[in-house]
Length: 218
Image 1 (tube, rainbow, N blue to C red):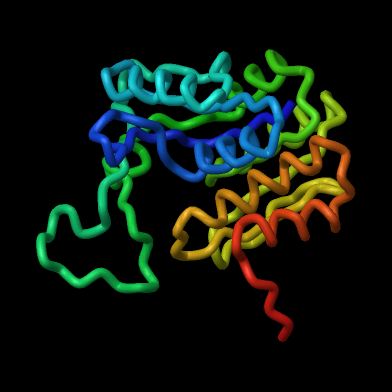
Image 2 (cartoon, rainbow, N blue to C red):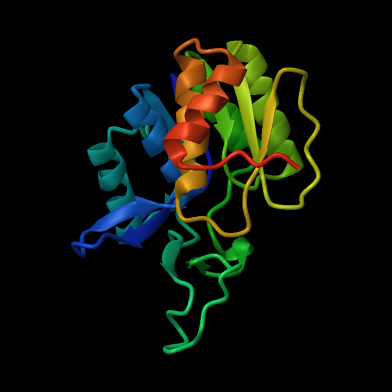
């Protein structure tokens, strides 16, 4: 089983039906398509958008037994980068989507106790992916949970960020500044391959090929 820890958001699907979005959801979806059983650890608001995220995860085949509800903060919403500035030219180096509310403190977040409880509730994890930005204490809880479950650990860090303190054997991947969804596919396929018993190098090669990334030698 693959456990993805992160921050799911509400996003409008092309058919106008509410669905789940964000890097953690992209990773979980790709891992599920790779054939793995996937659980998403996260937190959404106790609102209609949160309900829509839960329904969407179910449709995607992603488990959400450890998806928490925050009664005080709204479910984050993904919108086009220039949604509030019609006609504005979007910088190609900038993300194509924005997350609202913009202030991260106004969105549901995961603390160390949330991560610890969720991972103890999911002891069968073979791979744990910390897909979104978490506090140092929450990352430490993820590391402890991986050790408790003897799970492989994959940690995603923002572009330019210093790698966190993780044990030998953990894999740290740096997210790009802008992403068209291929990075989430890469991480998800990589996690799925690891969970299937593929060695780290071969799993990454498969993920690169499936996601459409190109290896650049410098």
